[in-house]
Image 1 (cartoon, rainbow, N blue to C red):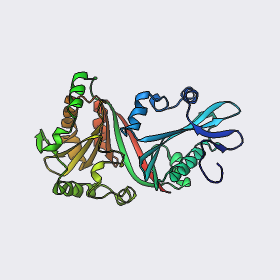
Image 2 (cartoon, rainbow, N blue to C red; image 1 turned 135 degrees about the horizontal axis):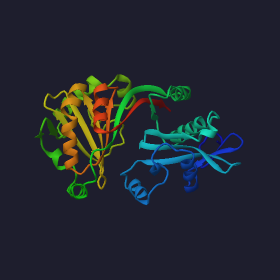
Image 3 (cartoon, one colour; image 1 turned 90 degrees about the vertical axis):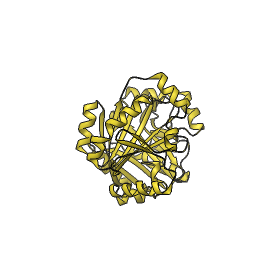
Image 4 (tube, rainbow, N blue to C red; image 1 turned 45 degrees about the vertical axis):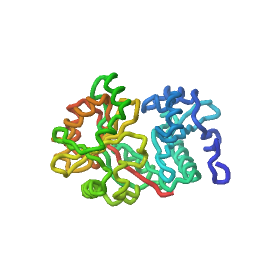
Length: 322
C-alpha cells in the first residue's frame, strides 16, 4: 500500500502483491482447491451486464499474487451492498501459503478500499465450525452481530416453461398487489403502513439489538431483508402464516430460477406450517434452486433441510465500523 491508500496493486511483503483477478489467477485458485462455486472466479459476460444494470451488486475480486512463483495464492470478493455498506465474501488462501498473513493482508486491503469508496461498515459471515477464522476477524476489529443458518440446494428440476412464463409476467409482482390465502400462508402487500408495522412487530421479537443497530434496521427498511442489497429491481414476496406470528421474505431476479428465502418468527410455526407450503408455491413459479436463511440456530430447521436433501450451513455474522 502506498501512503495508506488502496491502489490497483499493493505490496504484501517482499514477494506478494494484491491486485484484481485475471483469468489465469482464477485457474491458479481452482487448482489450489478453491472451495466455492467456480462461477465466483470465472465471470460470464451476462453477469457484467447485470451488474451494469444493477441486477447484481458491484463487486471487486482481489487476489494475493506471488511474484516469484507467478502464482495467485489468495482471494476475496468485496461487494457493495449499498454505498455505505460493503461485504467481504469467499476468502481463500492456497493451503501451501497459509499462516503467512495472506488472508489478513487481503482483508485489510479490502477494508481500506471500501472506506475510500465511501463505505461506513463492512460485514461478513464465518462458518460456525471455524473458531480460528473467527478469532482472526476479531483481531482485525470485527465483532459478532448474530447467527444464521442456511439451507441450500435444488427443490426441483429446471421447469423451463413455468420459469419463463412467470418471469415475463413479472414473477411475484402480481401477488403483492392484493392479500390472498395460499394454503396456510397469506400473501401480503407491504404498501400499507399498517401491514409494515404489524410485520415489524414480529421482526423485533426475533432479531437482536446488535443486528438492528449495525444494519440500521427500522420499520421502513426491514422488509429489504437480511442485508440491504435487495433492491426494487428484485422481485419480492411476503408471506405470513395464518397465526400471524411468523413471516417469510422471498427474493428472486428476473430470468433466474433461484430464490432466497428469509424466515422470521416462531421456529415451530416456520418449520411445521410454512416451509412445505412455500416450496409448493416456489416450484409452481419455476424456482428450482433455493437459499433459505433462518436467524439463530434451529434444530427443527436443520432436520427439515436434511429431509429435503438441502445442504446446511451455520454462520457467525460479523461486522466492523470503518
